[in-house]
Length: 72
Image (cartoon, rainbow, N blue to C red; front, side, top):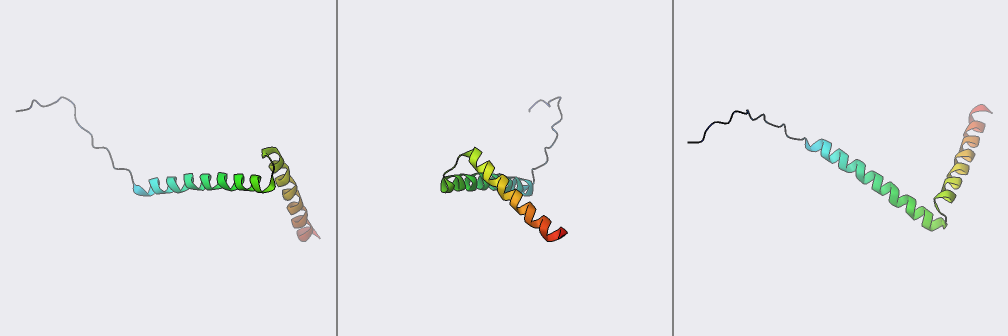
């Protein structure tokens, strides 16, 4: 006969599958975004700094177009 231990075993709740799947989808989304940025850099033939400037000018042009449509 086994001697009883003096510690009480507390059951650990099971992890829900939903949180695991949503976390996996989020990580997959980040990886997909990184791959798309690398593809664009190769296609345009620029480095990170050049890509940032391209996105800056793209955002500025978009802002000017939206501003013209709304306020004029």
